[in-house]
Image (tube, rainbow, N blue to C red; front, side, top):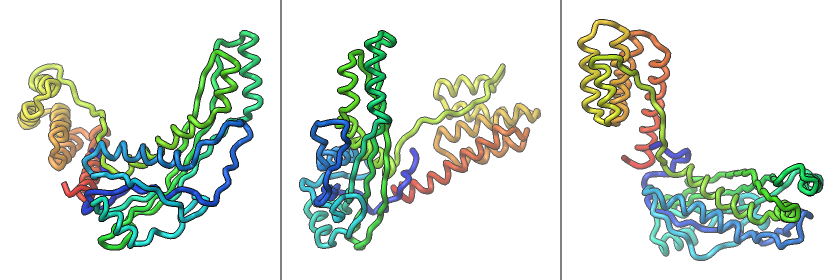
Length: 316
């Protein structure tokens, strides 16, 4: 588990999410690419919060509740932060939903663009009609940006306030030239997708998440070093640790001692004993001075700092 990039006090166990990004004075100036009705701002911002809450609920970091109602943005165009929400409203909402804090989407906007769409459409039709290609691929860019605040009524403080941007390349393919043009100018699907993913990506910054990582292990050609390798593959890390520690203590060759110490450090890391892992990887480096041991030591150092931050965020 890695700590989140954004640290929210461990005192906050539950949050309510509010959409306060509905524009009141913005005129939608959509691209001349299409005559279809542009996606509504409210729908897109709601989809953003859907992505946010969908990911947050997969973690036990917060109990998450979605506010039933929405509010007009403090900035009429919903393009930047305006005035903060009044504390009596924050208190009322936190009391209503029985939460510790309020996370507010203060503004939200999206944009979609296709590079030289006229030339792209003409080229797509010509290539398909002339039989130069079996299908057409159309690419565009869907962007969104938003601003979040986290209100903590207990201390009457704003725990977080910042802008978040997200961009996604939008791709559609078709074997029919008419359908290709239709997909070229149809942007609502792209905007809905990028809105949802914006919320999801932001949520990944505020909760600790699990990640897979790769590690190296020295293979043994014979004897106890090889036996420890088989124990590790069989997931008997306690047994492998004991074997490698014995190899280290009983052997006089620096090369063998270094390999055994390195593998023992790996076993300690897998078992969650990072301080012991650091001691043993340092022994490996002292024995033969290999860069691989130095790099592994740096990894353990970084993980120790991450663990300290995790304790700050979760209290565990």
